[in-house]
Image (tube, rainbow over all chains, first blue to last red; front, top):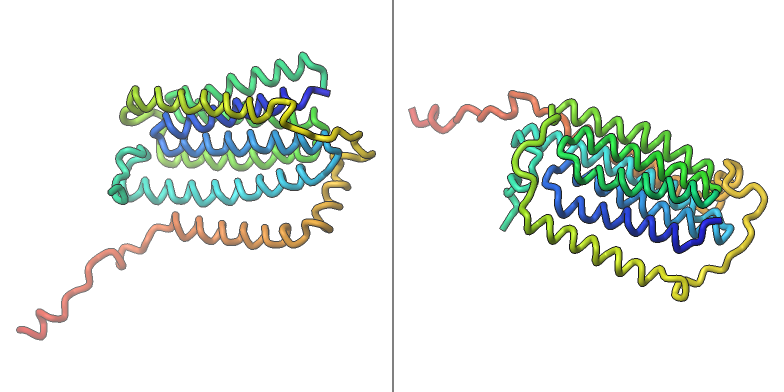
Length: 100
Length: 180
């Protein structure tokens, strides 16, 4: 079996790429995709540790994370569509209504 | 899972994850993201989480990503509009990511992480064991999840609904009529 450190390193790298994507990109859709990337990196740690502990709890948590991600993406894409209809943009720097 | 397969899949996952944030076209980002998700699903299956791996392919790569694709088509976003952030922002983002990786490496180094390795029981990762756990220990959470999904459906319909035109027009004023 692959050592646990390797799996954790892979998921740490993917998580950091997701963080960088949220910071760097200004397109709301791509920022949203980066959030999905981070969720998947965390799922990978759950599966890796769960399989080494011989417990099913990690897989159940991943199941719930997938459900929450589905709900989150439905709501988020609804917000993006509604924003685009009102402002004709998906560029995060142009949405300054709530900026102080 | 043999080590060379892990190395191949890990490299593929990292490269396609980088593709998500580097590509300028949102559709190319989305295709990179689907590739990452499929790679992670194969890693799940390699870690004896077969059911969750196939759920990842069906639910994530199948359903959620198609939802993203529909939104990209609907909003006609095939080309990137506007500048893609400042250079300082990019430098800050890369630095933050590098710091985060370094920190996580220190946290996840073997001496600190004490996981007691055990042999997996028979039938680990099967549909029966997942369902057994889901409908006994996690039954309340599972039922609450259905309420969450219902709320998400109602909320997304309410958010994306187009308001009737009659409501947006200002009502005729009654004050002028009284004044005349």
